[in-house]
Image 1 (cartoon, rainbow, N blue to C red):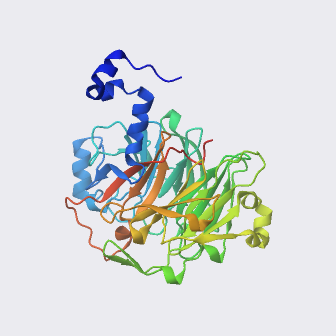
Image 2: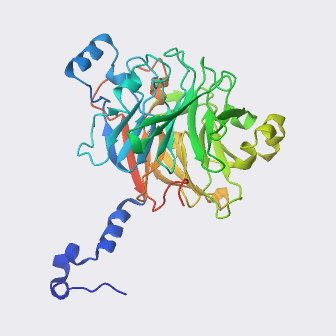
Image 3: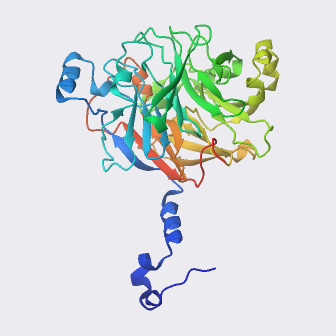
Amino acid sequence: MQPQVPLICEILGIFLVNLCTPNDERVTNKYKRNTDKFEVDYQWNYINYTWPTPEDYTNAVDTGKYIPENNVMAGIKIYKDYLYIALPKIRTGAPITLAVIPRNSKYKENALLRPFPNWRMHTGSNCATLQNVQSMEIDSRGVMWVLDGNRFNNFTQCPPKLVLLDLKNRGKVVHIYEFSNEICSKDGGFLNDLVIDESDGGFAYITENSAHDPGIIIYSRANNKAWKIRDKSMFAEMEASNFSVDGLVNDKLVPVDGIALSPIPNRKNEDRLVYYCALSGYHLYAISNRILKNEQFCKTGAWRRFIKAVGIKQGQSDGLAMDHEGNLYYGLLNMYGVGKWNIYEPFNNSKIIDQNNSTIIWPDSFSFDGQGFLYVLSNGIHKYFNPDYDLKSDNGTKFRVMKIYTGTKSYLLT
């Protein structure tokens, strides 16, 4: 049935466009405004926090505990009315490693970050607190799976760990799993990114990005156990190592980094594919989750026969993201853009959906908001990893959280 148009609308027509347009159509038109490019939602020239007291802030600056230009964002995830941000400690002077801001905040520029779940979890006084977080994922029940596994510097001697926080209960710690040194070393290990498979008691598939032992870690929540697979497809590609972003050449061989999981299948026992790629690489690979969940089979080495070479991307990628319709989004670092490919089509149908060398500078982490928007974090994080790069505290925008309307939602949902 067509909505009834009030008589006054028929008479005054164009002068009452907003009033006379049905609500559902106005909403649709609103969302259609940025389906072809990313628009900036939040941006920061510098990162600062909601300190307990002014004295705490002054003391942190005076002692070097807080050096504004050394703080960097790496991972973003949206859940309900909040944006959660991972802040890896790459350089000294970064006091917080996981934070949150309300999405309805009127401050869209240089918004203060609130330590999450609280300041106590960032004291560093014991290994149960958060040490150095790179990324996280939020499951369908509102539990955040946090990768506290950056151990590439000497900022902590605590083992790499996976921390589960209940977002429905103010971030209460639900569970902590410490990885053994054989799976992720506390001296050089790097838990980079993860996806969650909620079947069979829950699994996390994690990229281990360390230079000396790259691979994919599988964690079983039901068995509280982890194992690791390693393959040459997870190594960096020499021909993809030299590329420039924002005037800085990246010549390091960076291994497996981005990871994504295909949507929940219609049939319960149907396989899902785990997609992955090296940062210094063009190739995209995939393997069945059924294989990854079989610890004993992973130990045989025979699992390597089931790796699928999916295709060759237009450029190097950091983060990947999958929606519930099978659209895989991936950053294109050297092209200042974001690519898209539907997994049910040939890979040569992939396309670049947006490019902007002023705003999409190192597209890193992605998140869906549940309202049809895809978010991406642009952070220029390669500058922070380069010890020779002189970071400056100035008025230039360093971090942007941008969004585009896709009309889809996360791979975790149906």
